[in-house]
Amino acid sequence: MAWTYNNSVIRAGRSWTDDNGIKHPTNWGSWSDEEKTAAGLVWVDDPAPFDSRFFWSAGNPKSLDDVNEVDENGDPLLDENGDQVVTLGLKSQWCAKVKQQAGGLLSPTDWYVVRKAEAGTDIPIDVSNYRSAIRAYSNYLEWQIAAVTTHEEFIVLVEGTEDNLSVFATWPEE
Image (cartoon, rainbow, N blue to C red):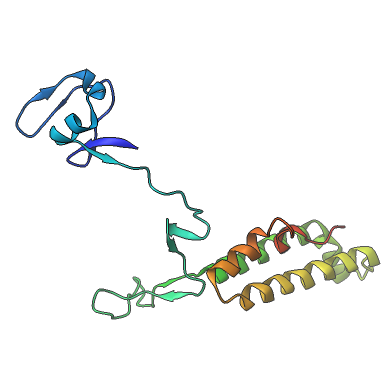
């Protein structure tokens, strides 16, 4: 990533001043690694890449299940209303995404349902079948999410594999 001094990134081509007031030249980048280290510079690697959908940071997976947050004493952490603070786990987050996607797919045909309720006009069978298929698939996805027991299984469910598409990529079509 970069050379740093006292946790500050030292930019190539710019001079910098150390704690002793010594101003180092703009060509410090041409120094050997030993010379840089002797001057107090520290090399910091780029952080490891990670998928923020599933991890807080590299090697730090998000919880599958909801987490009741606690303070440093282990007491429940409460919000301004006195309610327990809960960090939603991946299962809750992705079930919400499934519901949102199903709602988006159903939305263009909602007017048929309103027309049926208001005027008694039948919903065309193909529209009714499509809407039923969307609801059934949404329920199936939520069941799949709930059945996952490990972080690795969850990632495979969402991402799929080389041989199998993600179940999230195969919604019914009109």
